[in-house]
Image 1 (cartoon, rainbow, N blue to C red):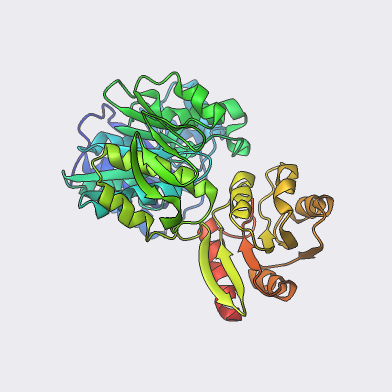
Image 2 (image 1 turned 30 degrees about the horizontal axis):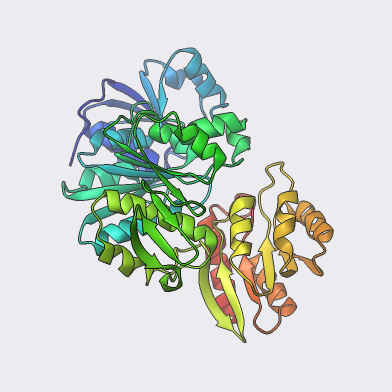
Length: 449
C-alpha cells in the first residue's frame, strides 16, 4: 500500500472517525506518524476504535477535551464537523493547521485527478465523467463525497487509472496544497450557510478547487453562472467554459438540437436518455472533463445514449397504475428541487421537507405551477405549507414518515401523474443521510407496488 511521502508532520490529530477519519488514521499510522484520534460520538467498544488502537493510535472518545491538542502539529478533520467548535477555534488560535482527508489523497495520488464541485449536480457529473472514460477503455475510479473514501481509492489506484473526485464545500474548505489536474465548477448559490456562516465563505470554499492550480492545469466552469464566471476569472489554469446559451470555440456548448465540444458535434439532444435541462449542463461539464482526459467520441456517445441517472437523483423507481415514481432524495436544497420540478411537464405530486436551516422557500413558488398536491414531512412542514398555499397548490397534506407520505401522495394522484420525492432540505431531522431517506421512499413505493 502507498504511504505519505511529502507530509512534514509527525504528530497528527484525527478529529472524527466515520469512514474518512478511520481511513485517514489508518494511512497516517501506516506512514509512520504518531496519531491521536478524537471522536465525541464514538465509544471504546467500536470496531474502528479497536482497530486503530491495535495499530498504535491513541483514541479518545466521548468528548472533545482541549487536552487532545497537546503536542499536535496538524488536524485532519471530518468534513462534517463545523469550524465553530471550541476545540477547532482553540486550534486556530494556536496556529495548528486544519485539513480534511482529501488533502492526504492528493498527497498520495500519482495520476492526474479530476475534481468536481458545485452547489448542485456533482454526483451526476462525477458519475458521467467516470463512465465516459470507462466506455473509452480508460481506467477511472470514483471517490470523495460520492461515498468512496478518497485516501482508500488513492492507495489502490493504478498508474493508468484516473481518480474522479466529487468534492463538497466541507471537504474543500480544509485543503492547503491539494489541486486536481482538471477542476470542474458547476454552479454556486446560497447553501450550507449554517456551516459556512456567510455566502462569501461558502464561495471561497468552492473556489479552493482551483486555488492551487497552475498554467499546466484546467478549470472547466459554467459560463452561464455569473458567480462562477466571476470567480473563474482569477484562476491561473487554462479555462474551459461550458454554456447552454452561447457558442464556444474553446469549450462545450449546446444549441437547440445538439451538443458540441469546441467546434465538433458530439450528439443530438433527442438521443440523450438522461432527462432535464439541468442535466444538459452536467453533461457539458462531463464531456469537457472526459475529452480533456482522452475519452473518445464513441465512448461519450455510448454513455449518453444509455445512462439514465444516479441513485437518489431523479431516479425512476416504478410505474404503478400509470403513476410514475421518482426518487430525488439528493435534492437537499431549493435549487436542486427547482431543477427536478422543471424536468416534468406532467402534473406532479411533490413530497418535500426536512431539516430546518432557517431559510424560507419563496424561491420555490414559480416551480409549483404543475404541482397539483404536496405531501410535507420533517421540520420544515410549516414553512413549506405557507409556500404551497401562496403558490396556489390545490392539495396540501402532512405526513409523519415516508410510508405515510407515499400512501397519501398516491391517494392524491391521478392517471399519468408524477409522484416526486424532492425534499429541498437536508435529511438529518429524520434520517442519517439523504441515501437513507431515498431508500425509505423506494421501500415505501415497492410496498405500494
